[in-house]
Length: 483
Image 1 (cartoon, rainbow, N blue to C red):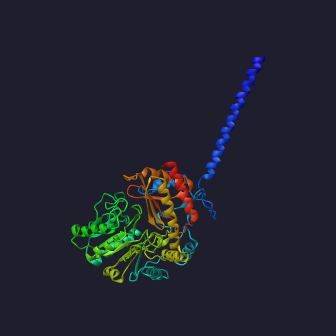
Image 2: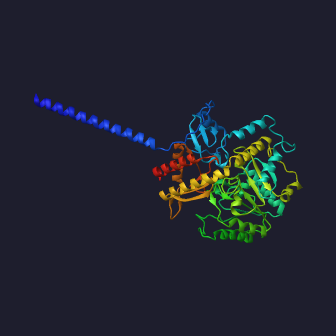
Image 3: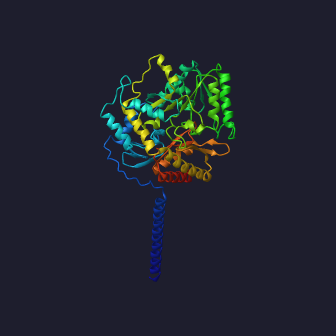
């Protein structure tokens, strides 16, 4: 009997110990979970409540897009994001979840999603008249043309409005060829200038080009890439790359060209900065060959680079034609070509027309956007927030070997991800993982480059320090977990 009692006691003690261990284990898991949650990056406070979503269900929207929209139109994320509302630097999905937008609708939202001043201007004009075409005058288009001209160097005072950057670049190429009487256009490898037939041929990324005959008359110079280029990153590489432009003109053209088109910083190609002196010498070579110089400011314009309002100004040059889009309308379909009166006169030899170019609603939006940029000093904010981000990205680069290069100016930044810093082998797989993970934390970023291994950080110009800190915390978490 005593033996049985002792056995029972031992069994009871054993069960008690097991229960105690389980309890301690569960407490430990709970504490770890609480601690982990408390350490996760938290979106900055934002005083805004999105409206209740009453549209089609998520499943309906995804199925409708699959059934009725062209399959070439891709979407981000394995689990697609449905953006139903935006306010300043934030986007909200159909469930009301908030995301910090650090890609700005592909570098398009400038002063902020649904900025009240821009919305008010659009609504006011829509209540008057929505469409006239340029065969009639209206109160928005010509005054806006003057306001844009006032933001440019003297002489670039003739504006032609279009709907998109592709359309505007296409028109710039036409002007260059008609004005000079020459045909060949010099562009850069790794460039992107649009998806119309002509601009797709100028674009030099195979991922954006279809296997169809091109228009001819296009020659591509070496990409002046300080990270991957053949000339490295020495003090005189700008002149070396510019010599390639001169060599191309001498060997791949009749010695005369129509023009040279260049992004002030390559965007889709992976935020590639041009080296010092490159544009100055390239412009010289092109003008000596009878060509004119076109600055593609679709992504770099309107103060995004921080130090100057236009990207070409950071290189100390003045182009003959400036192409602008994206930030110009804060998301509205609006673009423009600015040039001299002499060059613009070229189009007058025939009839030229654009149904929606200079639309009064688009121009009212453009005017409000431009005014807001000045009133809120968004260029200075781009400089300050961009410097904070660059410092943070360099700290991350020192911490994680997978970050091969950090580059850019203002709020047009890039972070190139590699498998090995010595070989610089692209690591698109890691980019994809971090891209998805950062969305889980509430951060939306872009990606690009020929190999898809560059993070493109180009948020609305209204972000603040809290947003910067949150973005850096998220990226730090993602790299720590995945790299």
